[in-house]
Length: 101
Image (tube, rainbow, N blue to C red; front, side, top):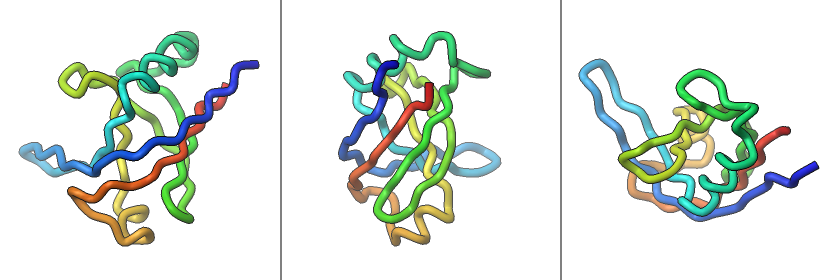
């Protein structure tokens, strides 16, 4: 079994659309390439990959999504996580990410 546990430091950014806005972090390109290489069989709709994430003391399950514009996967950061960790757009955070295989 392959260990797909990663840690990285990334900045929260906002993606704005007509009907709302979403907060994301970039998964570094080298980590994104490793994830893509080992999860082709796990990819779901929009080529998303399920992940377990931790920022600070907050853990949750979500999916990461490939982004051509950003050069790797992007990780959505839901409001409850931002609130629990008191983080906002422009802040850099430490992220632990696991891809269950």
